[in-house]
Length: 173
Image (cartoon, rainbow, N blue to C red; front, side):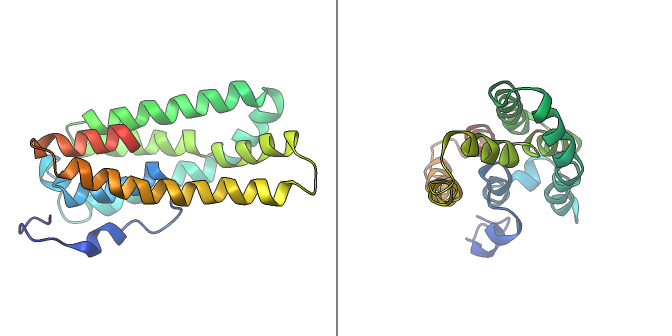
C-alpha cells in the first residue's frame, strides 16, 4: 500500500536494472511503508536504489582478479555470506544512512557473484553443455524474482505489518 493507503502497483517498477532479489525487493519494502519507517524524503529512495551500482561497477574487475588468486569455493562463499549479512543489516537498520551504507557494501559483495558463478559453471561443463547451463543460471534469477513477489505478498498480509519491511529485506534481500 502507498502512503495514502491505496494499492500502488507502479511503485514496484522503480528499481530498473538487473533483476536480482537483493536489489529488487527494496521496492516491495517501499510499498509497505519503508519510506515512513526510515524517515526518507524526496530523492532518498532513489539514492538508496542507485548507490548499490557504484561499488558494483567499480569492484567487478578487482573481484575477478581476486578470483584468479583464490579458489571459487572460498571467494564465492565469502561473497554470498557478505550478501546475506547485508540483507540482514538492511532489515534491521533504523535510518536512511544505515540503509545507504548497507546497500553500498552490498554492491561490493554482489560485484563478483555473477562472473564468479559463470566461471565456476565453465569449470564443470563441456563447451557444448555451457549454453544450456548458463541459460538455466539466468532463468533461475527470473524464477526467484517471481517467487520473491509471492513471498512479499505473503509477508505483507501478516498480522504485524510493521515487521514486514524487516522480514522482507532480511529474508530475500
